[in-house]
Image (cartoon, rainbow, N blue to C red; front, side, top):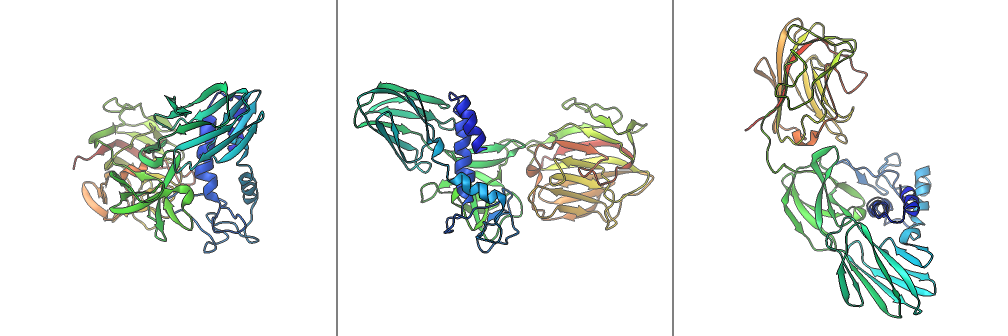
Length: 463
């Protein structure tokens, strides 16, 4: 991606967003890959972003993708291209064309251009001030300086004269440059919670162009923790902060500085206004959502309307519900009526999720012989689940209900049949699910439901 954006920037040098991406990937991916304790520049094969991820040195296993490479034991092809990339960081600092010099990245450097010498001094990205000193020849040339898109209220100063610049542009200075001319660019660094594209409740915290990571030492969280953004505070250090997450204050450092320990870069943030009431209701007498707030359900794989609900043949028939149903919910209740004509382990009454690693499902029976509700987020080692006391019966309509609100509660025909008092993840982490099925699993290896489904309902409890 560094090579790609470098070439795209060369094709259209007027755009700063390519260089913004390059800077972002350089600071938050590439610089953190290299082991600062390694005499030989060993790098990681893979930088994980799950809550249990880490970068490990000698204490890591050679087979662990989060481990640093060694001299002989686990040097892969990606380690080779990784080392190659680390030798090229000077290339995109500046570009020259005709009588124009473009400063793209804020890295200490000395540039010779048309008989002039431009020295870049800065402690960026830990400090937002960049100073360019020109040893000039008295001849004119154009100096372009990138103004990143992430900055607010940037200020450019030339020999003491200041002006505001617009983020996401190049500041253009055309003048006769003389010995000792000084250009200062002030890029105020501020914190910002950035939402994940697939889940508006999950955020990463940035400080200017730096992603901040919570440091967990040898004891990582089991799932993404919920943070209270009101508790964010500055700590001693160049770019050090802390925040209360899952009831504990955790240290936040630039991701590129976190090595030889577990880290976490994503947090769930409670919504400003808690959503309550019915989110979606599909009676399935027809395909409409009861309150017309969502698109119609879609019958697929041979599913057909029945007298009470949708009939499913067990060989591919299922119902597709619209994407995004459970987004931004701090608690939820899911219920449905189901009639089984036969029962197969791991079939699904419902399965809302993204893939085989992130989901929320209810199955009439597992290999243990009981019904189960389970939730999982990619990166978690195991599921959160609650088993009912029995498997769902065959040949009768049964009402199933699951409540996710600090605990997991499984009800069959209105009676509590199972409770998990301490799940590791909650409703917020599930996010705006992309694939929402009735009668079908996210996993194509699992059987389809044989029977019928009616009265699917998703709501957010008020309590």
